[in-house]
Image (cartoon, rainbow, N blue to C red; front, side, top):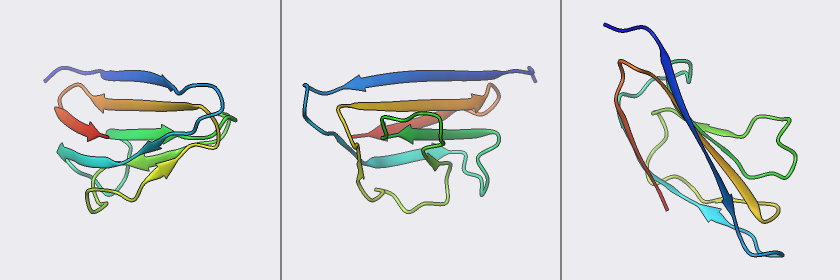
Length: 90
């Protein structure tokens, strides 16, 4: 096994003055009760200094909608490189 971590950040931008909604439709195949090794964090707030909503497995999918407070949403996917993950967000 290899040692390491991989992460991807997507910055989604709506038209000025518009808000966005995201629903996590699926997450897997690996699921954990904690988000240490694998997870998806959605930051729907303009102030990104605080943590967003984390998804790492034990939530029933599809999730409840996540609404932004402005026109920007950050989606941060991270994983141990030995744990494949597929996430669907609409």
